[in-house]
Image (cartoon, rainbow, N blue to C red):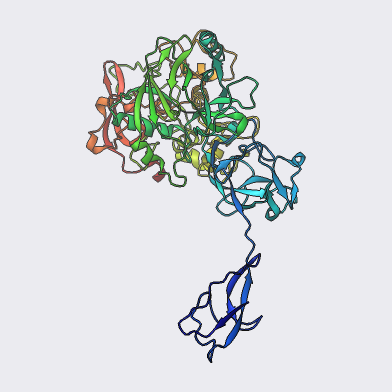
Length: 638
């Protein structure tokens, strides 16, 4: 309360009163009335005669209670599918990192729930992290790649609105992001079949550690003992000193490239190698093995990590190669498995923008070694000179007879009409070096059946648990299975999208012939003993002139066959003998930028992709095809 007297030039005095927990609003002429004058406002209209005294009452408003808050959010993390240990009910996710006002929670940070200290016997914190897709559905495993929202959620029956820091600060919750990178096979990743544990070395035992890794005959990695491992390559999250007893386990992810829908990993390998050629690297006529590499912590849901001192990687020799083989190793820098995710471009754009570098390698008795920088992992391509399969039996017809001899022929296949049986891709390539799947092989041979055989045997019903009549390959697989040409596995599957081995392909091709059932002759190939399930089929294929082997004496039965190798064997099965000098002019037939005339498979791929009329001619004592015109219909027009 204050008192004022008349003075038309005078302002009200400044308020000097205070009231704890309240804010001064202004003056009123009664104790509990509306404000009529603000602080230090002019006194006019309050006094009507001279020397009149007026009593004014201060008016107050309760000040809202201010509760100090802090922001809590999970740190963004990046992992790959798989791993041995992690967080969550099934240890599918990385151990959470919590940021309080942007700083990592220290071991001393504690929380209260409803004013009481949190009982850490119930868990380290009264909250955890769960992950949600774009539709706000919780995900419970790490098998699907992409970006997911990481949300802080209460544990048990805790009310997060009643959780505060130990000094009473309320929590404002924010979200983070979990990025799950692609792997080629989620099942194998979950079984840790794509990783190998790192070995640690010092200056005193480096050679012994290298020998230990090589003895496994599998890809591996060694790390210097003075390196610093950082989670997600972030120096703010360094691991403790490398120790065999540490709770983490660093490992090398050594993975195939991703299979394209309806295809295989070789699809993307071909794109990478084409880009390397554009960067003036010599890839023509080379065999290749392309892998995606990275460092991960398998005890933290395959979270990717970096090594400050880099890593030394061991890559075992591919089958049929060795210390005398001349290799080239190419590195496609910066191609991480995040294409198509939020803020990332598509794969083809990233490949086109990537730098391709030649890597220095060291060859030993069992494989190659090379060094990778701190965060330098991505795809690598190992190249070597091609030593392709050549038939051990060549036609030797009578030179004066233009018609070919009549050896054992596959009666169910159309060996007269030279229809095409392979199609190219939308990008204009035919990808001769890519692997071919079991479903694609069934489809090729289905196309080559005689019309009456196909009509008589066509069905879309099979006993395979993984083949449906609605699948694009449902009819071709079911038909050839019913004919006894293709077979499945003991578990009842056919595995249509799996690549097919050379032995499996040889077995399928020989089942079209009557003269089979040969006993394998030991010593025919150095990598077949005769006890294998496929030994007889390999011998049949040799006797029929379908396969020969490699210059080193191997046949490499367990190698996945390429499209080019498959076409060569199919052509021999059908009795076709294309010759590069007796095809049609290039402007009259389909040609492919990845099927150059210099490649050993050039004529075989042209034969497979161009239906044509032909005549038999003799050249250098051998009967070959001389193309005369293109056929005016495709295989499916028959």
